[in-house]
Image 1 (cartoon, helix red, strand yellow):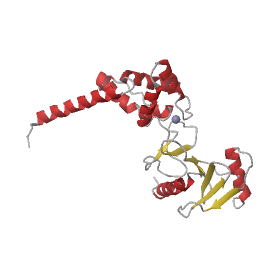
Image 2 (tube, rainbow, N blue to C red; image 1 turned 120 degrees about the vertical axis):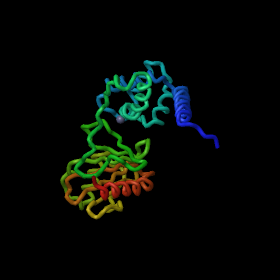
Image 3 (cartoon, rainbow, N blue to C red; image 1 turned 90 degrees about the vertical axis):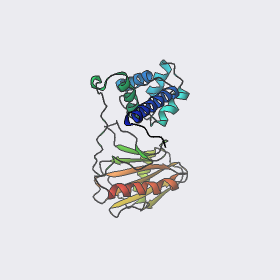
Image 4 (cartoon, rainbow, N blue to C red; image 1 turned 45 degrees about the vertical axis):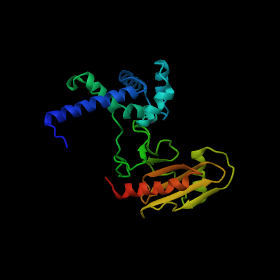
Length: 256
Ligand SMILES: [Zn+2]
């Protein structure tokens, strides 16, 4: 095996990094400058993200960039909606900026992500895959977790008790389901208590209707001070609910 001096090795690494950089830029559907401008644009205009790429779309249209190329590329890097584009593409944009200007003169304008502390006492900082925080910048919304990319299954952490009422009665849960879904009465509501396998101090109630897609499950601690609202769908709940139970058990047993 050939031996290299420290300097030779360093030079080779540098060369390789530069080559990788060139390949990366060549593979990008927008230039580093355009990426930077996009982030500036989002930073200036994003008030509250509605979990779409609405603003990104406007930017791409104005810049005459091909959205069919750029949007999947952004999504591949965690930019599934405007706030995530802003958050998840920042490091990449920053790495290009570092190349252009010495780091010392680079002013740091970082958006502040929400505080992940909640009444649950759970540690949301290092969520296990495939979970992610869906509304990192919406500080005025309850913390929302999402499974994977598409958002068919979400967990919302609400730092207030569930509506007052008789939680032993199916009518209570049925009313809650209708209030959330705003759907008309079609087929009977099915209520399942202790639907999730959770630690003893957490009670779960699954509510669904065979005629409708939305499936809700509420998890309430013994002290009732907060609750967690899980939303999934009729045809995917069997896959989702064990994952939800696994995550909540993980969070509840590894408190911060
Ligand atoms: Zn968003």
